[in-house]
Image (cartoon, rainbow, N blue to C red; front, side, top):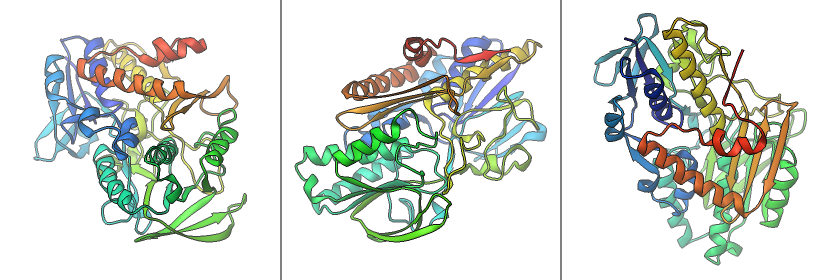
Length: 426
């Protein structure tokens, strides 16, 4: 019997546990370990931040569905990974031995890298977690009582730009519905070299489409920028040229601000230095295995992926939902192969697919592969994207409640584009 432990119960970890149980069968043990007792559908957090969703609508308690699927569930944080001895140490000092470890923890949010950034001890909000989005909703309601300038953005080193764009455009839509948009100057601050770069070098005409959308909505922007510090009601931003030289400093007032920070590896993962890069992300080979510890696999935001291209101000490469699903599928296939003493063959198809909601419309981006040059580059705009994201939200949350492992991207979306596999085998 093999014991596979999945660390982290997010967009990668929860599906991984379900998929492992389905593919490995009852003779093998699956354990899911998480610092939280629930799954949260992170893509809906911008809606929570404006009160369009409540946390209870996008959160799935995991004890019952895991028990029903025959998966052991330990809702405790991992404080240490003893990779040499195949063991995890948990917050209560208990230990869990494993034959295979799948790390899907997501990131540590590096608010501390910019003075005054972040919701706890800082002056900006976040939509990176559902509790953060709930706090952002509280702050937003206070803001509505006395509206003023709004700053939304993504800090230097950020790799997740979609939620920043979504938050800016959803707030714009919400303020228009409330008939107070005219009271709120809005500025988008980003480390991207241009609007629509997305950490992907642009996707199709994403630059033109998003710039047009921002102009139409009267949202000013400062690209190629670093946030120097944040104080109560004021953000200091340094703008740079194409060579990375600072050209101008802006002192921007705000009554409300949400900024996506840079990411790092979570402490327990980053502490295993030989497993990670300097930022604490897990290094992997083409089969999602760590080169130092080949019985450790990793997927999602916690994986080390180099930037798509150098940029004047540092940006990272995003890990989209499809990419994470593809990584998980490859991991499950390769663990099964290793148990059966056959060579690992599955490789994740690192493609990017993003449904970006804009409140009353949306944009869809497809980059296959993520790193240019690409076989497919596709960007579309329309109200259908808004409804597609709502449908995807309902589908995925239902999937986490039921333990269904059907890959939505493969069955519905990518087949329409002529792509039918989540992994490649060689």
